[in-house]
Image (cartoon, rainbow, N blue to C red; front, side, top):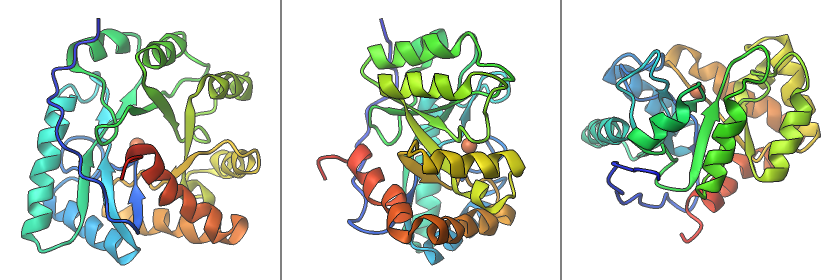
Length: 255
Ligand SMILES: [Fe+2]
């Protein structure tokens, strides 16, 4: 039986136009993303300059490294940063989410703390980093799907396992798992293999969404630079659809 202690807050729909980032470590001081409110505000200013109107805050939910990062706390921290943004006079919207790290006890963790969904939707951003596809990943996908959630596997181009990866992606895509690519990987900054794989997966039509996965302001420009490169190679319409319309269709289908 799933327990969800997180109060279901209203998640207001975004403005009708503008980019929305659905993978972001903009919340200050709680993971390896922005360290201070000032860094968060600098990042938001840069995002506004690049046409973004909102961010789903997705800090790492991984109790081994960040035990305080639960859906309840993330919702509170998101509200706190939203207040800072409003106080700074910036027109920018935040929603709570998470990047859920799969680990051996991830299902009991979700039963205790709730499922960390994106902006109050049924979509759950997930990742895992293992040399081979871990035993605990399949039960976690199954458990989420059985509960009516849709997992979105973050940056598969960065986390490819040594063997059998694309067969696994095919299997889970057929079951309804979506894939999110990182825009930074188009720049080469994440390494040669992600640079190759992000293009391979674009060519194969595997991605539903593209996102910045921003951490701190110093790497934000390079991540934003991925939009221009991806647009040159795949067309601006294709790329913009994956950071504008598709995000709205998934997270705010009734808006
Ligand atoms: Fe991330």
